[in-house]
Amino acid sequence: MKKATLFAAACALFLGAQSLSAQETVQEVTFVSDPTQGVLVNRMKDNWFITAEGGADFWVAPLGIHRQISDRFSPAASFYVGKWFSPVFGGRVGFSYLGLKGLADGSEWIGTLQGEPLIDNRYTKTRFNEFGPVFDLMINLTNWWCGYRPGRVYNATLYAGAGAYFTFVKDYDAKGESHGYKYGHDDIMALRAGLINTFNLSKHFALSIDLRATGLSALKNEQANMINWNHKSVVLQGFLGLTYKFNNTEWNAPIVPVFPEPENCDALRARLAAADARIADLEAQLKDCLNRPVETVEVNNGPLATIYYPIGVSRLSRENQRVVKAIAHVMTQDTSKKYTVTGWADNYTGTDNINIRLRKNRAEGVAKLLKANGVADSQLNVTTNNGNLSDLGEKCVALDRAVTIEEAK
Image (cartoon, rainbow, N blue to C red; front, side):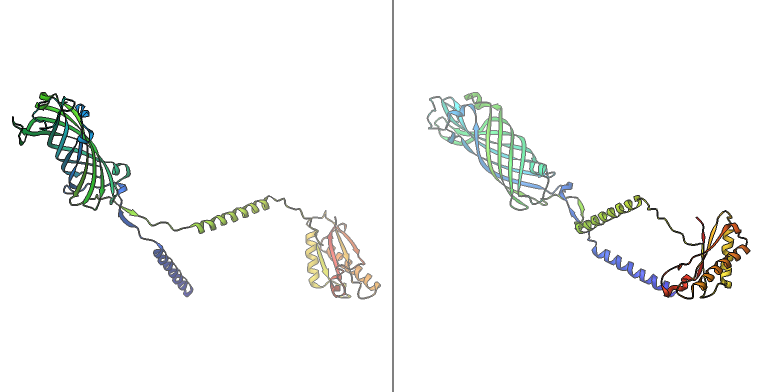
């Protein structure tokens, strides 16, 4: 009972130590937000922004080719309020200003820059100030193609939108004196598209380079009717902008588990491979051994029995009588078998006459007892041998004083 109790206690201590060791080696799983698994929709008040930008535009109109290129650039500006609804899609609305420099076909026009000579004796310089509301739908190409990543410095945003512009021109009287600007009764529809290159300075501030093309189409244009101005044209624009982002500027990502790197098991793999090779080699050896032909060994059976005598004695002792009776029982089981009974004596002691008599008496004494126990006389061949039975030397003469009983071949 005490041994069993001690054994149980030892097992409990061993298992406890193994469990503690396993707990120490297990590394904890951590949980982090992973934007590659998608993003979560933020609150409505998050991801708003305002942008102010200023730059220049270049009016591409058929009559403009007659004016010097360096004299066709005009200032432009915009102000927007927008929101990103996801890392990819957003929108903005705002107010835009265009200054357009071109040419009019005619020498007398209320918008002519007074005092300027005619170009090619035909075209008059013109300038329009366009103001109007605009809106755009935006796609963040960087987040779309490369996946959302917080803290990214550069983002490329493609956008397209529309707007409406109202034209203002200088108000000249009959004497050519300017009285400020007046509404020119021009209503223009605009379609626009562009690419914004944004460089994040911090979570809330960013610089941008906005490259845009705006198509203009006059819906109501008194100036065009007066001076044969082209109703449809394109404006190329470039802006440098500053953006401020409100509230939360990033996007929450799903929380996923991060599992520790697995332990380097190359050494164990090498040991396992070596063990597998050793097992394969042993299996091959075993297979060869099992397939090896069995050698037939011819066993030389000794005599059925050997009965030993003391020196100078030919009479059977009681123990030897019991042995001879047992041998007789074996012989009578198959009377077809014949046996040779041979008497022996050592040649190291006594005279030849004594030894001859001992050999004969010993063999005949055994044969007589066999016959008395049922062995047929025809089964026996009684003889003597003048040599030594074992011939192992004088120290082993006791092995030479015997009678052997062998099955005749």
